[in-house]
Length: 369
Figure (cartoon, rainbow, N blue to C red):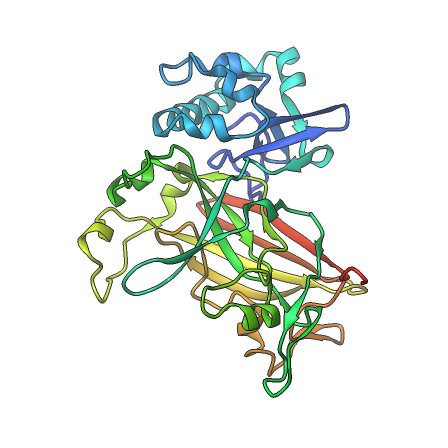
């Protein structure tokens, strides 16, 4: 265990150690940190302690304002960094524990930090679950924002009455999508695909993701090429990237695939994870948030994907035909202005959790035109 105190129900146990990017009021520089308990370990302060064969000549990656350079080093560097961090944070290791000066500079309270996007996101791909192949499309990378960033209700073209011409205005069917996303670290050369059995060497970690959706705009525009303006106004991710190595203790056997995938998509090694996911909605004036979704999520080989359980208000309200009871006299079919949505998730071990923190966003009114 660690010399850093961690509550049993904390998302950020010694077994987790997720990476994020943060700043503080007294130091606005963006820097890489690792979450443990209610604290952040500033990795830039202890970069000189990463002196193994994979990181000894690349300590500068921990001085960068994003995780991109570190992720690009690849699988061996990620594993070495995790081993080094667990060694330094162990209860019986004195290097950091007994160096009062170093500890005072290296640890920051999470409550005093501001979190930022963990990486510069050049592109992201959304993949849906299908029987034969992963059907996907490119999302708008410039609209990916970190948790707690407000989301403006979009305006767009929609056709609520099929017998009438389309109209333009604020979306009346603003929705969530409970998803998870992979961060891909080391890339590949153009024209050289990554074999599925090597995918684990390229997938750095996972975050929670809310792929906000304007269903009425989406329904009118998506045929024949798919979503565009109905999904490009904001995609929220949680700030802490949980590494795949931290998730491996929660891996489960792969399910029987019927029909069997083509050989290039088949893999024997288990890569399915047992993750508990939750969604809450808190309307303006509500005393407490209401849980609208609980999902025991089985993750497969995808970048951003939908849970098997209902993970959107479109599904929960049966396309707006039924109301969702939030308690306190509040009901919803879709989101109202002022609603605050929170996604959370964790894996449960024996006396500890490996969690993702919170993925939050509050709906702002549409701009007046």
